[in-house]
View 1 (cartoon, helix red, strand yellow):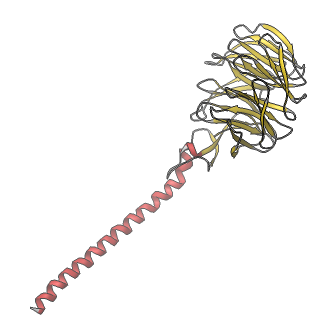
View 2: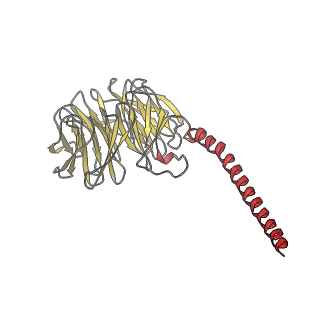
View 3: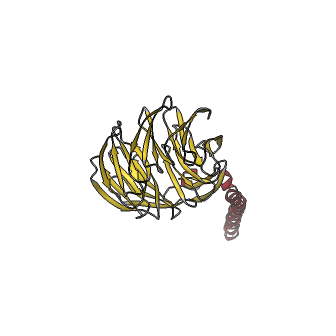
Length: 344
């Protein structure tokens, strides 16, 4: 009986040992197979970033789980030389390359350049009128109108000296002329000049609030509220060397390049707050909830709450970020000191 018990126990023990050995072998095999897979994943992750990417860096303020997603990146795409102005036409991004004397049309999803179109000398600003692209050429003192769908040039129109910024009011194009201290009103359909109106010193920005125009005067440290007929409705102080301006649906935001902050004004012109940004705020954009500021001297963009002005984040982009725009999903920043545009 004792021998039979030992035989049974021996048989069970052998089976247990065999099972343990088999499991160990399977686990070892699975582990071994997993190692090359992880190495392959690590090597090929950058290849899954968008086509045309110059570089990508992890963005800690966005979320990615286990895999490389475009959503957790600050990605840079190659443009022309000294990119400055940027606008969204509802489908594609348009970027002015100041030192290349052209504009590019770029597909937001993957950064593919859909076209490169020659314009005037040193294009600095760009705007969309619902069908066409308008480009301010600062050193040829004119604006170029292109068909958004094809890039075909529809006209070139003389304005004031050193046109620096553009706005569309639903019918007309408004041009801030930095060198001549005025703004030009053009009929968007034909390019005909409808008026030239005196502004402050070195107007460098302009935005439409749905009723009136707001003109930013870089040399006067103020903004002017102007009616569509060109009448001055008010002049309001802001910070030093105001450069970027945006409308959030209720208020006006002004980037003060010289004082490293942004001003928030009501439509009545009252100052609602002054909030710190990075070095040299040069452009401002609204994303539906937040204000984004391109910090030219800091190589960053600052994200502010539109409701409170609180800083929600500071993000590294390229050298000398000059322009900023929202495409409905992502923020685009032109890096004037290089040849790239950043997508956040």
